[in-house]
Length: 340
Image 1 (tube, rainbow, N blue to C red):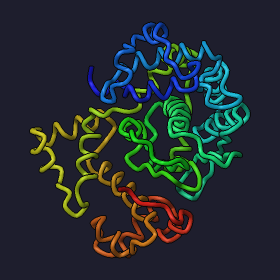
Image 2: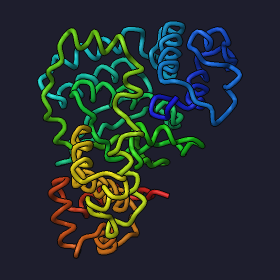
Image 3: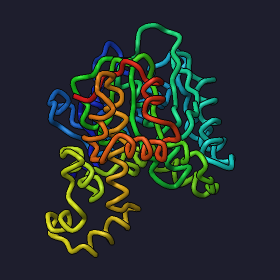
């Protein structure tokens, strides 16, 4: 099995925590999902996305809850279908998300989401009545549902700029970074996902047949369709994230490193809906948000590290990206720890 189509066994264990009596895994249920119980305690083991999706469906039927019994009210069987049907009737992704989040806020007790627009940024914020944060798996399962449905509604992946979570960082985050963003921050004052606000204007054109196909494949399609660790674009993004922006190679150098011609590089990225310049801009935006959130890092240093000639050029680019200046963004996000 390729990494692209697999899920860590650690997520399987998380899914079983509140759905199996006394925390004891059900060997028969796991076997029906195609999961070897003997592999359950192996941290490095992985299962197919299809098996994890089967487990999700089996547990949902057992508990009458599509949210792994992680909320006092939960999401009764049929909730995913209902929220998709209601959301796809809206004209734009923003209105579809408003409908989706309103339904989740009505159904769930501990997680009360809302869509907040901040100039050119949009935040899906989870308000929580309880003081103690949920575990990371609870938040990420919530984001998996919301982001997966949003991507399906729009017919494309919605890039995630950052994810903040109230809980402490769990021992395992690799799959979460592949599914969502490299820019995950833990121990934050609130839990939220940040996307570009212009994606909210995307039109929705889903049909009843589209919905039927989506639900027939759910949640497996959510798990793998809108993330692709093997994609060329992701490989290039990963390489860029490990280099200082000032040292990023040009497209010719990237093509040579990959053993491709420049035209083949452009064609293959185009097939993924990407360009090399677009990937560089995306990584710069992600790094800008992460570094601005380190309150002690001077603006001039951030501008220099991002490869800008001076602070003024950085300010202009940031305003173009997000519709506000870097200082305003930093004021909205005080005290956040930067990436390790």
